[in-house]
Length: 387
Image (tube, rainbow, N blue to C red):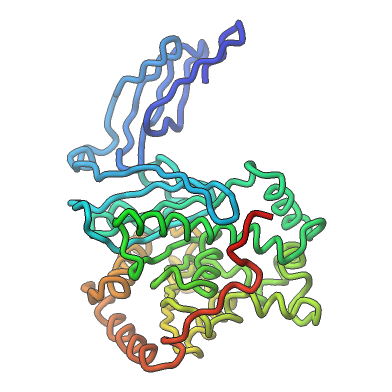
């Protein structure tokens, strides 16, 4: 945004994003990186006086040779009355009228026009999923700035509770986000684009929370990948006492909070999970192990993969920094969703062995009563109007 001395404002914008800008001291010219979801990054020169944007240099000639896949942005209003934005990637070779499997990737409100935002898509290669025949939904949660009610609930969650009850904090946070997922999936199913029986969800860190809740509270998803999470599990209370007081009303073991943990903590609802869950983790924390064990106890397919550090005495970081781990995690994610959504067996050397275990999980799940049981509706998140 250029601000004239007179106070007049001039927007300088591109259909994609302009990031990492640096300008001359005079602010007359600058260099930025222009990128989009399907547009690889390139250096551009920006002239502030007239808003001209001129290409300077590509950052990856190999990516420039790839014909961009189709993408569009779609805003929706969920059943609670809150708005959220989604970016939709169409599969390569998209044919109108054909229904495709879909993968929803989420991490708070940071899905936007960026080509390979690692903090958003982590090791979920969204463009490669589209190349493999998936519709990819880059989903944002409803921004709290649109409502004083959402802002108050968010504030209360971060200051150990207050004016918003634990039931409402859960409802206005995670369940509100899930209702946005339901709305965009329903819209794309209604459009004839997505096969409702083949929709997966992937989320890392904060996104892991919502993936775990979505799978243990709804029947929306048929496969899930949960990256290095574990928040919301009772065993994480000691490091999140303030937040847990707001979310659950007290610590684990507190009789007044017991019903809240039973209704919401993912590991307590393992028997209601309606989708296989892959957890990829950087260190062996008990929170992820608890969910894994709860799912296995309920005969729900669960894969827990620990990615090693550089030595036997170190852990991988929360944002995987070892290239071999990054490649392996992306490959495992693609093979996981291919197996559970498209019934395509893994092809990599490690994946072939894992595939045998997944096949055994599928057989056990299919034969169990749990695999056929409909999930209960969320205890504190009915499809009701906005509070």
